[in-house]
Length: 388
View: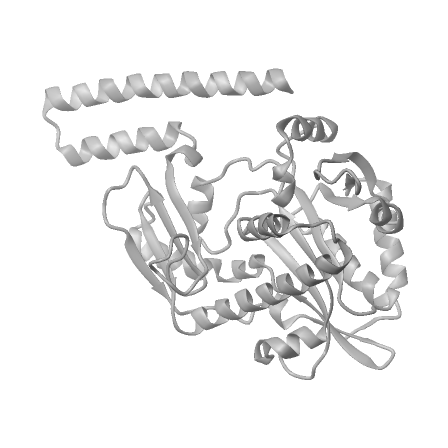
């Protein structure tokens, strides 16, 4: 793996050197022929964007999730996004969007009944916003003529802003509830640990966030934060290693595509440990989903729990977002009581810095008989839960 990494680095440097030589030649040709500056600029920008990785060309990308446009890292209503390239010196185009399909299917949820009580499985993760992708693409194309290297601000207004703010508020509510459980059950965690956990949660926009709730008798989008908190029974977050921001146009996601490596907080592992993990999984470009924040807020009957887990694991066979490996970390207790019954196997020690509470990276291959058996077990266990 180390040899392959060195070869990739050398190839990238050679490509960059050749690109620099080409820039000099094109600049010289432009000056000699007295070509218009605009055509030369376009030619040079295209050359740079075609040869330099997008992560190097991109000067700044931020998801605006706060109320103050003057605060670093924020910039307007929730659901807004800004993209900046150092190849574009023009003022950014402001694209205001009010149209939305909110409430999304995941927000409406899947209704179930168990022993006379109604329940819902919600998905309040960012991937639900992909239902607005066509709206975003059309607005972007109209404003920029599909110039994928154009600086722009997409700003949510009206119904879209209110819908995306609702999603953000409920995500934050679940986050707060999860941290409350962690503080009680994981006393070794310090304030800086929660800061790091929160950071990883914020910078991984490509995720699903499943929540099992008691049905309060009103539509999810009409619930107050307190009603949501009282109804929530358990949650699990699924983060994906594919570089995708559901709030940006399709053409931009293609431009910014790059290998993130392991998803979510596993990226905090040392390079040596990451290389070891990839060596075990054979291929660093395979689609991986990381399970995190598996927390119960109230007692949950096993058939209900398994109905939600069946929904999570069966998503691996979604043709639009297939998953090869589910991966996650677990301490010794969770490893034995939860992960092994799901047929997860131990991949590597998890370096937490907390030697008194060792953890392990676990994985489940979705193309094995073990995974099929896990799905069958969850489906059988949840048969008493009636889908409405």
